[in-house]
Length: 233
Image 1: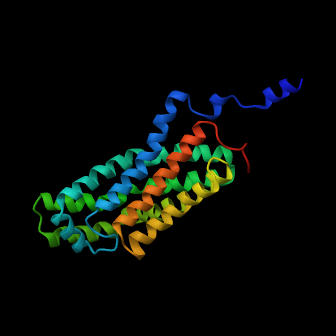
Image 2: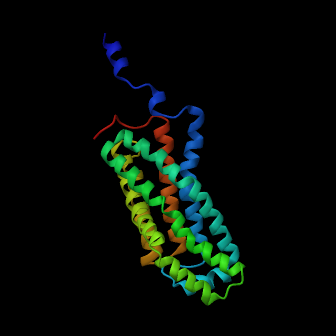
Image 3: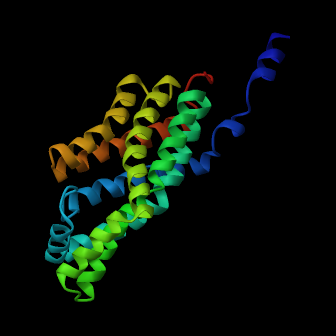
């Protein structure tokens, strides 16, 4: 009788975790998005606070790095949102309120990435088309002032930082990550914000994104293999 009750109350593993053959692919998906951004932020030829004229000049001075940035942005565009959904769903199963909030905020934030990449596309296209630098800079200024670019850019900035902070807490609360690993995930994006804007350092910025990549991939691997406490509110 006791065995029957325990069996009845347990969820079949297939309803909670992906099939074993899919687990490495899922972890790789979660890893690729933030890892591509980590490399991108290290290679980016201009700074977050640079003026449009400075962006145009620096892109023209290093077209190889800018081409790599665009390809890495493409990879991130295909992997970041699916990766956040994958790890966010695992967090929401273990910590319903925090995990769901983290899932919604992070997915909304990372969905704004194409608006951010538009700056690189215009700068690189202007350079390749031999458009005068001052004209390309004016186009960039207009692009940045366009509400349909400015709004998703703001959502990206706020959402991806807040979402990853919440995700780290939810993964820890759900028992998927130990406390130290949850802390690493949670502080990684505030560190990115510091090294991208307050104390600019491409290398340290890239390292902050590496923390995000490693922490989320670790969480995905642990969640897929069944780690974690029962669901909580």
